[in-house]
Image 1 (spheres, one colour):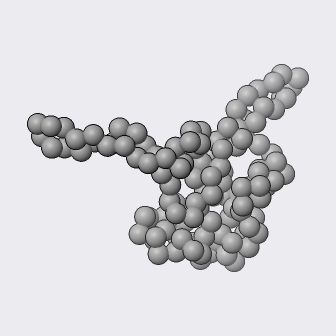
Image 2 (image 1 turned 120 degrees about the vertical axis):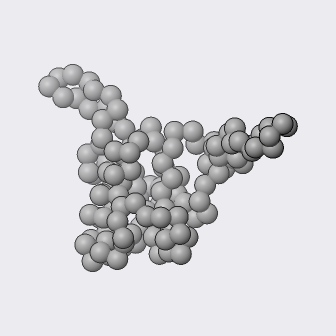
Length: 123
């Protein structure tokens, strides 16, 4: 998953051009920075459980200690674009053998990103 996010960040940086990318503090930003700049950047939410994108997080409270624990992860950052993780990985033929879960080529990746709503010129 970490490699996919790095690939997304690198590809978007290349797609947007170095001038726009220079305004970003890096491929990973703090929650505070993202909150302040979320209208200026494209936020991608890459996940394999697509239903959890629109779900509501579930919590339980321990009756003895009062501690609250997250039992079901769900929800998303407002304005985020949903990317199906399974589409980020593809099957490739290498030396005549099919290899699953490989990173896609640039053309496929750019097409996928456009299909989820990534716009040229917006980091």
